[in-house]
Image 1: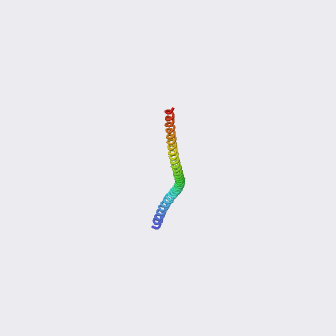
Image 2 (image 1 turned 90 degrees about the vertical axis):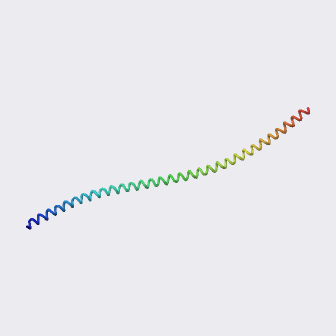
Length: 115
């Protein structure tokens, strides 16, 4: 009876040892997966950081372009106003010359009639 109990205990220990070995193997596999996932997470975090930096650079570029556009729009508006003033001035000068020319032509016609 003692021998049977001993053999049963040995069999139970062998089963437990086998189960422990399987659990260790599974734990090692899970640890490898955890390490791989940790590396992947670190890689994703680095990619996220790079994308954030890139996005910030793009935002800065867009802000700069908006500022440049506003400056150019302002300069264009000033130039347009300046050109409009110049056109009004030239139109006035043309009208003045036209009036002077018409007076001179009338005077010439009068002088010609007198001759």
